[in-house]
Length: 247
Length: 116
Image 1 (cartoon, rainbow over the protein chains, first blue to last red):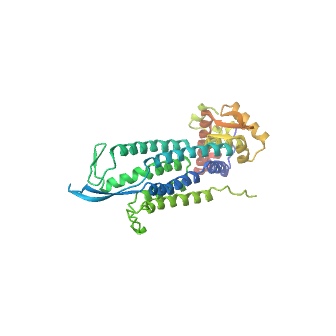
Image 2: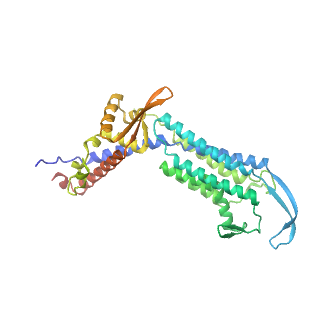
Image 3: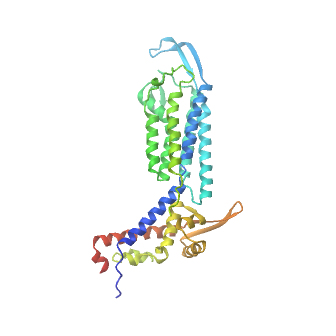
């Protein structure tokens, strides 16, 4: 019987550590997180302009209040219904194109498909919701919304949370969570959770001193997440810069 | 290494290591291909710090063993070689890493067992 030579205790550990380092370098070469963050930041900023251009105020004399009595009220309308649907679809298509081109130039495959597919599916959901709103009108306070058997009051806290969730949190935040998973990017996961908190928190915009009847009323609500996304894009650009080789 | 060998419970992990896979450069190639899903020859050469000839030799060994699939084509006018891991390659890599972990565990649990 031949003796098995005693293996060096450090050798297999060293091999596994080398493999871990190789995996880390491949993941770093695959990441392009800054690009979708930049697009979403610009898209959110663009929404301020879209809201400004589509802003209109109407005074309605026969507006029913919560008790059903006719009273006078001001109706503020802003936002092009197709802006987010078209903008997000283009953003996901551009992101897919960016990652594929980057993959070819760097020579490593891209894990971006689940992210883009999730994004496009959720944009389709948003599109369906937008279409429903166009056909049925936007619910006013006091109206009841029947949503899959749930009777929701537009003025209630849970409905407002659902409304905030079905905006950018759903169509930008959830796909970013998927991206952080496929890229195994812990920094992006933390960033996305902070972004979701920002989108879902009922932050008052009263501090900005912009009245709800102002054409710029959406500025504080949109500028905060836009700035956050743009700063994220800058941060990830700096963090994902290829480092110089050490001698 | 064969599947029967790795299934033997008393086998020392050193004997369960596959010579084709265990070679350090080839293990590196499989790791990069596993992580990247699809990887180009130039990226592999840089990541593993190898010459083109040396890398080609290792790729031939892996291709003959059915562990990788090599695809040659053009990107514009530039010739490109892309590599993907086959299901057998994926299994072989997982098995190798598992055996290395077993080996570390065995060494740490008692050096005397490993030397017996």
